[in-house]
Image 1 (cartoon, helix red, strand yellow):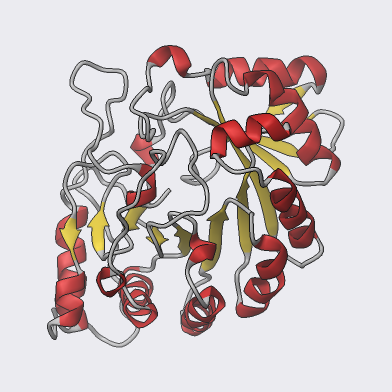
Image 2 (cartoon, rainbow, N blue to C red):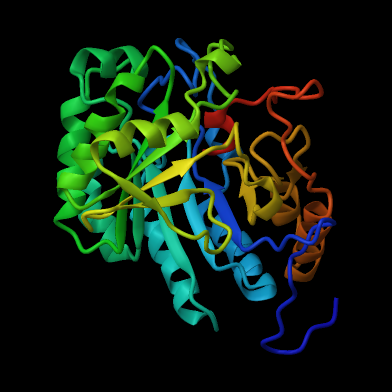
Length: 340
């Protein structure tokens, strides 16, 4: 692959979609056992030597940014904050972003349980945006969903993050019928009163218990209707390739995002690729195939070869996940193993 200095290639799949967002799982471990993500009692984690090092993650990110113009990095897990010395990785990625010839956004999705200790160090290291998971405001229900009695820790983490100068903080809620759908307005109010954006996500078939079915999905349209009945909403025109439909509160007090992954999937505009904690490249959360980069990184492949492999993988990306259709097959890997 011959390239001149400063030259970038578009990372385009066979359907003409350009990949500009790299989601990086830094660990498969988590301090929660959320019912929609990880089975209760799981004991088998990736051996530490199989997990990508910070230098290896930095190298893949550098290829994606410098060769392909990737402009969004998001750290996920498992729970990314259980990875030791996480601010060190953020600082490495931040330096990469500073040297790039285009803006690179660095974000993280977290359960917030240890954020009271890490919000400031992560921001200082260069983390720009946070998505914090919060599926309920009820302590008993929080324990039922996550397997942990740590709602107070998460609320403390949210407050700690609010005291630091993040560009944005979003509150992520997976809405499940008969579980927490009666709290949609309460959670919207919680975020609204703190000048945060609430994001409501349809329940997807990646649950640890294998109990997902269409009846458990609370439709995006119903979520909007619930909120609109209390806080009138205006839908904003869609911009870019983000997964959420954005609604502004008519009184001007912020906005709410709705991610209709099941009923109105955004596959046609998807700009994401995913790197698992052990270095597998995936083109979709629901993909059945994944492609190893770790062995290449550890066996002397140069950046040209790694870039070539990433381009080859992106060309395999399918049109969409087909949830709810006869041909849909749930992936073997669970959310915490893939990277949320």
